[in-house]
Image (cartoon, rainbow, N blue to C red; front, side, top):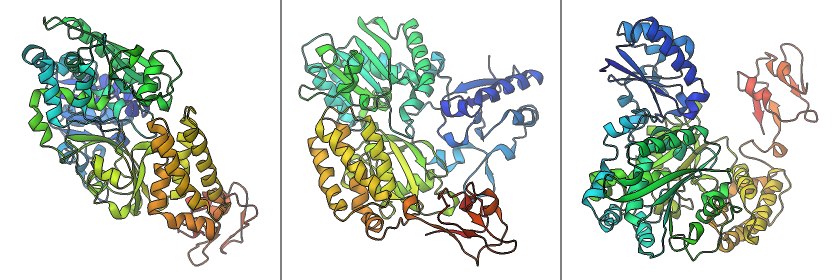
Length: 596
């Protein structure tokens, strides 16, 4: 049936948690009530990317973008837009700092400044409908590879494209495939690493939820190129929706003969299994992931031998992450030259980032390699909320580094980020504003990596704990002379002596904050002061009598009763009773509560 309108409602994890399924149900009821079933098709999709604005509805083919919908909005929306043809401006996106809504998704800066390859089908298809993926050239690349290319030619195409692993290490994908194919051992295994454990990261989850068949097709092509007959998609159990859609997609592909025996009648056999991991951060490391699938404790092992030589059950194994696999069909369809023309000399194509933190348009973005941090944060992200100044951008997840605001014009690629002390990682990007304490941020991420360390090697187990204790003391006002020098000595030692990438990269937040924000460490230790006003042991709240209007909101809202005063007179804060919760500053409408 040909519909006049497609109502594309986002049903990713974020939108569902904000009520998208209730909005969808209300939409179905209202469409039926208005007798529009033959005109309007409701299509559940994966994430559109602008996750902070969910639930999201995109009306096609007009491209009208609606945000922050509730069930109560639906009757008016259906009557005005779908029945009378009058889009509802009050439900549309308004760009930060502007007053006029932007109706069309193509005109919203968040979307128009991106370039989609791995996310090419986001918001456009029902992830549970294989026919919709096929309608957008799905499995065409697999057919091309199996019927008109040799395995060697497939690998050569991937090598020529310059595709590097998007899971963090950036190892050339084609070279990795070549090493696995070169092994004479059989059977061979391929694995999709979807164990996405970085705080604030949701790249892999969103691809699995929005476009699972792109990953399956990429893996099938890779299996053909490397000579594998069995693959595993390793996803953490905290991703129930992604796992459900992935399992559905595998079954659909099997029913269509695109996974299993004699694919496309070529004699090529390849099957897939979705494996649920328990959620250990260290499972993102290849050898730990392999151990987990085998039923052993997820601990890294020494390399060599590398997984391409001896991996799963001692057999040759290739592991790539979700985004890497999703790029493969496009490269085969459009050619290595097309892909390699995007990006920089050493970092080809695009990269998906989960943009989070103190930024107006938090969400999932895909941009060409070589784009600057400034373009991502301001042109796509819409800048910093409440007109505050940007202080730093952290890339690479909890093991990444902080890049200061004066390096915002840094090009984002593997080499430039590494030179700045950060890493690409799997694609986490956290923006922090001027009210962020960099010592506290380093402590936060070090606490995470310390708790997630498997503890197998001394350098990581003992070294991270020692650094964390030093940072804890500094933030508590117990920093001592020599702490900075000790951190500068410990961090490189942990990097050099750790067994796996977790320990080798975990000191990055400490090293980069010392490199770019050493003055904050010195203020904490030497002046007993937190410049950002975050560390409770080093701050004191006071009330500016000149700014205070004696409204008494701070007095009424103080949970400790630590603020008192007479009517029409600025109140006082009892420093002994104050627990430094910050409620007084939050409720003050005049900026009279100061932090010293």
